[in-house]
Each structure stands twice: as C-alpha cells, then as structure tokens.
Length: 328
Ligand code: 3HC
Image 1 (cartoon, rainbow, N blue to C red):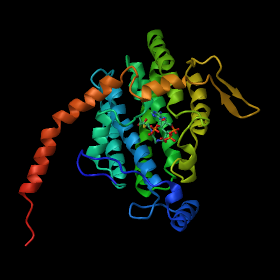
Image 2: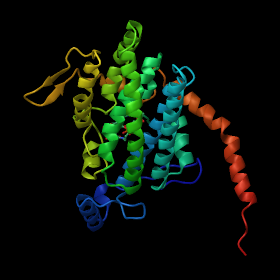
Image 3: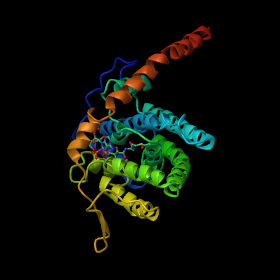
Image 4: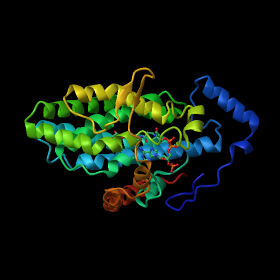
C-alpha cells in the first residue's frame, strides 16, 4: 500500500462498492461472529486504511502525550514522585512502540508514520496541545486523561483487529497503574494546603474543556464512527465514551472537594444521561489541525528527537549490513 522509506504516497483506496461482494460478506460475517482479523487475512482496503489512520494517530498521541508530563519529571515533588512519573512516561513511549508495530502490520512503515507526524500530516490527541503550567496540570493528565484513555481503550480492546487489540490489552494493564498513581497525586493535593488545593482546582478549570473534546466530536458530527462501529474497530461511540467517563469520574472529582467548570453539568436521572455545555467544536478543529496553544512546540520537540536520533538509526543499519552474511 505504501512505498518504502519516507518516499510514499498512499494509494487510492477501493470504494467499498468496488470490493468483491462475496469476500466482503464473509468478512462482515467473521466480524459479526466476533472473530479476530489478522494481518494476512483478506480485508477491504477501507478497513486497512481506517485502521492505519486510527492506530497511527493513537501511537502519535502516546509519544506526544509523554511531552507535557515529561517536562515535570525533574520538578516532581520528591524522589518517589520523580521515579513514578519517569516510569509512567517511559510506559507511554513504550505504548507508542507497540502501536507503531501494530500499524506496521497493515503495510505502512514506521518511518513514514513518523514523517507524517513531524510534518503535520497526521493527527494526534487534541489534549496534548495544551500547556502543563504546574505540577497540578501533570496530576490532571496522569489521573483524568489516563482515565479517559482507559475508557476508550478498554472498549476498543474487544475490537476486531488482532494486533491492535493485543496491544491495547497490554496497554490497558499499564494504564491502570497510571490511573492509581494519578489519583494518588490528585488526592494528595486535595488533602494539602489551601495553595495546593487551589493549584489543583485551577488545573481542573484549565483542562476540563479539552478533556470533554478528548472523546472526539459528538456522534451527530463524527465522520468515521458508523463504519468503525460496524467493523468493530470502535466499540463505543464518542458520546457513549464521554458519558461513561462522566459517570465514573464526576463523582470522584466532587468527592475530593473540587468543582467542575461547567455551569450546565448535571445528571438527567430520567434519561440516565449527563448534560454538559456543548464543547467548542471550532476550537477542537483548530487544535487538531495544528493551531492549538502548543502544537508547534510539540512537533518541534519531536523533530529535534528525530534529528538527534538519526546517527543511532544509521549506526544500527550500518552495523547490520556489516554483519550480514551473504547467502552462498
Ligand atoms: N484528538 C485529535 N483528533 C481527533 C480527536 C481527538 N481527541 N477525536 C477525533 N479526532 C479527529 C479524527 O481523527 C478525525 O480526523 P481525520 O478524519 O482527519 O482522521 C476527525 O477528528 C473526526 O472524528 P471521528 O469521530 O470521525 O473520528 P474517529 O471515529 O476516529 O474517533 C477517536 C476518534 C475516538 C479518538 C478514535 O479515533 C479512537 O478511539 N482512537 C484510538 C484511541 C486514541 O487515539 N486515543 C488518543 C489518546 S491516547 C492517550 O491519551 C494516551 C494516554 O496514555 C495518555
């Protein structure tokens, strides 16, 4: 599907209507029966393309997501917190590696994915384009952003594409440790001095709106949900995930004595549904298309990392060539 190295052009993907109807039906039947699709199995080109898009964006979110928290490792309060945060950030980068490998099984080389990221052709999660000004911002990410990620990933881990769901399974186990760590950080600030409580409240106030956008646009305007749900790539709609997050975490935030900066937030008990202020989808579009508060900074850091790591990749490739034994 993709050419080698960084010189690649995604090929035009067959429309579903042009796929072999018998193969297409067998494929859908397998999905409906709950079977896993593996890399060498037949799949519609659109399924492959959608999976590459989604897994690649997920992988990028993990490495970019490591940046706002990573800057807090040296400033985390105390040795224990520094060690825990360092381990967490390391896990997130490891998740990206697992996800890039899963996406590679679909035919797009890792170099091409990184190239698309650093040149702004690929998306990654909106939320990591906001600044982590204080230690409390880092605590918000560790607890609540990871909580949102778990809601999404636990659902998708039951999906149809084998390599992705196996990666998600492992990722979810590690994320559940992050969640406990994050909750402990927030609970410590909640039980701390008035200044510490104030910092945490300010972090909640800053991050709440991007957090509501994290689950993706509302179902009315989501572009890909219908086909992804039909193919069991996505196992819950964006609104369903947002609702699940609100159900699980609003009471926990209140329990710690914090408020949520949304005057319309309330549980409609009759409809068993949280009502919220509609997120600003114009801001969301701007941020995911490159014009958020930190987009430029995040990509600049990744470009530097790519540049500085070049000699290592070249040395590894040269070494493997040197030791390659020609076949007789
Ligand atoms: N951030 C950036 N872009 C987003 C987004 C978000 N939060 N939500 C949606 N979008 C983009 C989509 O990618 C799509 O853009 P495209 O057509 O150019 O690719 C567009 O907005 C329309 O949205 P849709 O609802 O149609 O998109 P999807 O059906 O793909 O749903 C999703 C979006 C729910 C994020 C889905 O892609 C998904 O479940 N992805 C896998 C999980 C993931 O990527 N999580 C990211 C966070 S990982 C994380 O937080 C790590 C943690 O450890 C810290």
